[in-house]
Image (cartoon, rainbow, N blue to C red; front, side):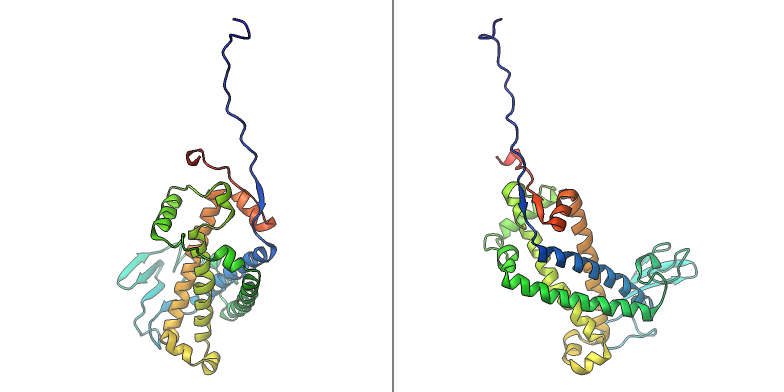
Length: 280
């Protein structure tokens, strides 16, 4: 068979190279890492403070003979977590481990031994870092329009059908590709706005409420949060919410491509994933 009549082998055209875009500006990257450092230090030093009295109450008062809603403790060589009427064995993880009898073991505390005074020093220092960095970031986000351009949820994104579609796509681990990956998706915006405008402010205000000195300057905080013990409980729940956010955030980074995501938050440059063929 000659060349003119020989069959032609069809080949798929080569894919266009993935586009590299500048997605994360320097102030955003600085705040991200400073915020991450602050939150981890606050969680671990807060664990040391919690170990001084690993019980949580609602209301104005709380002591050993009052009824707590949460307890992390031990009986002999058995650790447990009591939540209301539910008790969960936690031996080897919380309450009692071979190297610790504290509610939260030293692996998760700063310092890595029990010292309430040092734990408070670490906590107060990074609390100020968190407050100052948040104020600086908000000033930048407003003046640079980062808040309105990149974090604000559009009218289309607020539609229940749009949000539900985004939830389903994430549940299927089908993340935005192509030009759609350049911007934050609605779930990211909701999460980030929730942390910036709800979680961090509530953590700061409940922390202020637990301070007797600040109670004298801002007595209305006790009324807002229902007493110092209620503020302590809300503070603890916010810490748990931070842990959940960090876990989900890191999981999404791994699933979406850790190298590309890390490059974006370290250098600012992000390689847009190729558009999926099923969407073409």
